[in-house]
Amino acid sequence: MDESFSSEQRPAAQSVIAVVGRLAPEKGQDLFLRALAGVAVLPREVFLIGGLHPGDEEYLGELQLHTTALDLPVTFTGRVEDLEPYLRHADTLVQCSLRPEPFRRVVWEGMRAGCAVIATRPRGIEQIIEPGVNGLLVEPGDRAQLTRALDTLITDQELRSKFADAARIRAADFEINESARTVTLSTPTLSETRWRAAGGTYA
Image 1: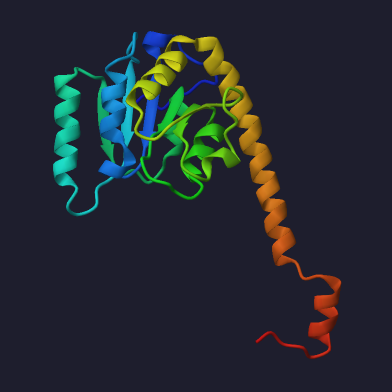
Image 2 (image 1 turned 90 degrees about the vertical axis):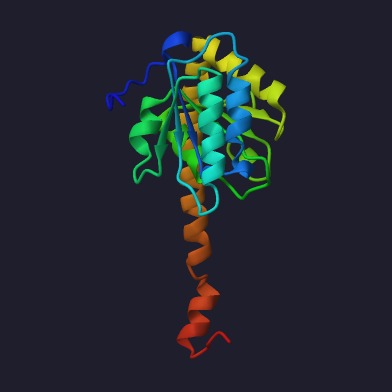
């Protein structure tokens, strides 16, 4: 991977996609590969970033077979300690989990790095992605919908740039809001402070 990066989004055939997550059926990487095979213009490079849990080796083999059979420009990185170089190198981040998950931090990291984002709708993600403003949301398991979303962002460089700019702003706002909420929750109120000073204790 060329570790240089630019805030400029690349033309369609030069674009780079990152897909981050443990390689497992519920994470939807096989769905992503089949959806990618249907796009009008393939990106230059796709990074499938993630390690394996014991027992998932067969799934990795299936993904590698899909990649070869469909002639896709995919690199399997395995588990990486530092995602940031990959996210800053990518134009688009795709998260295609099939099952409901809590808030996905990697989406926020991708937005902060300046990626346009495609993600599935399981709960938590709509906290940060506003569809059509800073990313696209698709239904879990809907290959045709994922292909359309990929087609849209691969071929429309201007839209990718718009989403990436809005994503950076949203990620920064989200970080500030969450930090403020954490401070509010962790700072005792005046009444609590006085109560503790008077010898009060929590059970």
